Length: 72
Image (tube, one colour):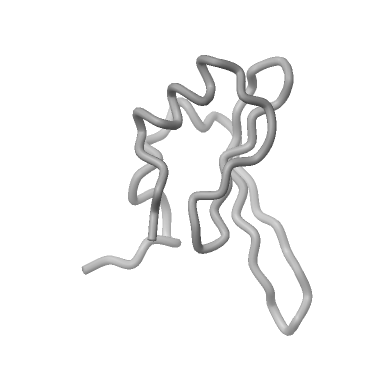
């Protein structure tokens, strides 16, 4: 279940809270010390941990992003 809203993501980036914030189901918002933000998706395939990331988190709508959200 998604816990980060677009407003929350913008606030985390604006205050410069460096680190990774979990949104649930393997999605993370990563903010570095310089204030740059990106999205991270962690998952396992055949027991092996994998990571897929994308840059520009503030430029995308965080909620319902990509193929990882269940469509109803």
